[in-house]
Image (cartoon, rainbow, N blue to C red; front, side, top):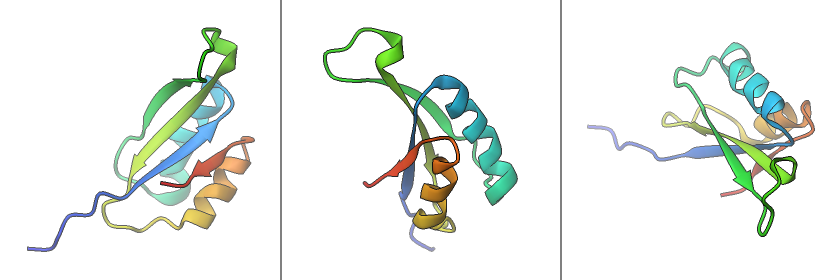
Length: 84
């Protein structure tokens, strides 16, 4: 039995709309099978929704996705890929 990888990629986006667009476009661009999770990440000490970042979390069990490509992809929406 092949070992299961727990590789996750976290893309940080400036707003919810961008996160939703990225989540949808991931499958189209990279052929991902799994639906990415969208998570609101409030900045420390901030309660205002405008001060939140939005995360798109994607599991990459087959380790098919290149971090550099994901970073450039997130950059199209003024975001970035967070290093684990």
